[in-house]
Amino acid sequence: MPWSRAFDDPIKPPKGRPIVTLKDAAAYILKLPKSAQQSPEWQAAGEAVIMAAEDRGPLMHAHVGMMLALHGAKPIPEARPAKTHWGRRKLLV
Image 1 (cartoon, rainbow, N blue to C red):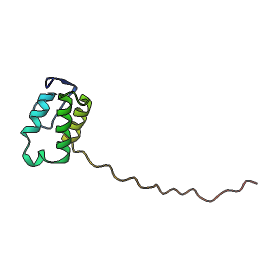
Image 2: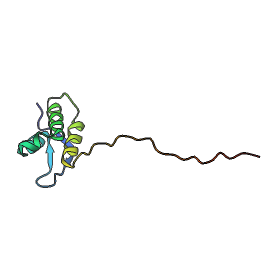
Image 3: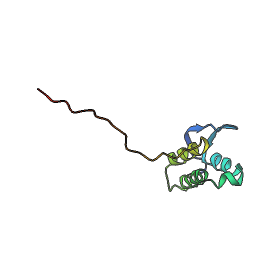
Image 4: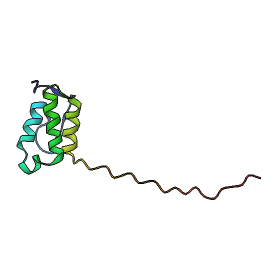
């Protein structure tokens, strides 16, 4: 397993050293408190890191997963239809 694969751009966590390789990403996740590791964001990031290390997924997915987990992925609000007011119809004379 190529745990030494490097990300194209290092990931800068809020504290600590930059995350450069998949091994660094796995170590960072394992150092988190168990409650944080169990969050959906970190579960997804960990799965993406493992898949990239086992050549079952792209490295970019691991990078994006780590970024979303680190910087607080917020759920996308449901799309509501925009209220458009087209005004009165104008008559052409």
